[in-house]
Length: 90
Image 1 (tube, helix red, strand yellow):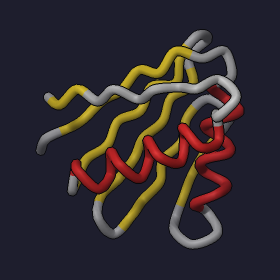
Image 2 (image 1 turned 45 degrees about the horizontal axis):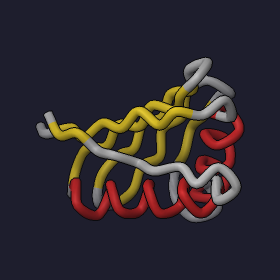
Image 3 (image 1 turned 90 degrees about the vertical axis):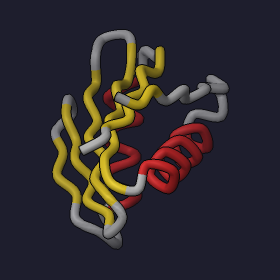
């Protein structure tokens, strides 16, 4: 299974993790704590981890769609920081 990972520098990683999970949780299954989250889409799974200085994102499934959905939502939520999500596929 191919995995795509992005490490996004931010001091607000836990807040963004929770915001993403709560946003998607209205329509699809999510599980989260302040430090870890899992969002299950029909097209794949996103796993999030809040580190002290970064939000770590991992997606599997339809990578093109998963990368686009997670990045666009995070960038919109974090517009004040102008975060850029750069994915690396393994």
